[in-house]
Length: 86
Image (cartoon, rainbow, N blue to C red):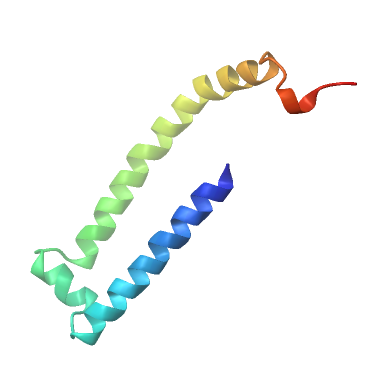
């Protein structure tokens, strides 16, 4: 399972690197883009903090339900074809 996720993350990182290099070549910086959108680093940081403060408690509450259900389903699933006993 982690292989497709890692492959996707590498593709996104590579595409970001290429686009960032092209934009830098034309003199476009991150500071310019942030100002163009009417944002500031402090505002982005505040949004990230608020999002994190909202997400963590909700993740914990959801995990209290999801993890035991997943574990029970994992325990009682039928054996797959590759785990045959001879």
